[in-house]
Length: 244
Ligand SMILES: *Cc1c(COP(=O)(O)O)cnc(C)c1O
Image (cartoon, rainbow, N blue to C red; front, side, top):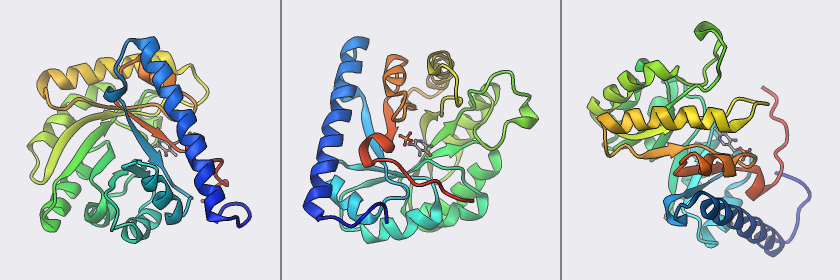
């Protein structure tokens, strides 16, 4: 799928090296922030990489896997059904995909509107599963609400959405998630996220997940209290551009 075919042992060694480097970055950032390493969970975002990589990562002790497109995630999760993995859906989600995603995802990071809460609740109930949901928060500032694409609820809409999730059948409120705005300093954005996360926790003390930090900004995310990191490139290597 990516690059030239190589010996499986070579890919395993490459992933093991990358994992060790990422774990070291996490350890250093936790030490700098005065946080315990076990407060931070690493999610490997395996989008565009094959199920064989997921299997190798599981063999290296990783238990959390993230994907952002249903059409890719569904068969991959099926191929890896024998592995003890938790599947995180981290991408923009259309309501008509809710049923499919509820079939294999354990955690949905991208819940940003009421309609999606209702669709996921119906889907989870039908599937007889409980879906952990995070409210995706838009951290773009100075962008009018109507121009913010699909990437998250505006901060002031988050508490009501969190209440809806907490009250929905088949769903469990996990906390919040965000992606730092492209090309801007991630620190002020993650600081704003921490404030939103604290507000959600005041109403829902168990909703302690703060999903923030990717390959390029995991240190800043840890400094601002992230509990879950979504790391793709730094673990798996560069992705080919996806043509939409
Ligand atoms: C792809 C993706 C990531 C991982 O990004 P990297 O920069 O490759 O680490 C994290 N979060 C979301 C929502 C993604 O789509």
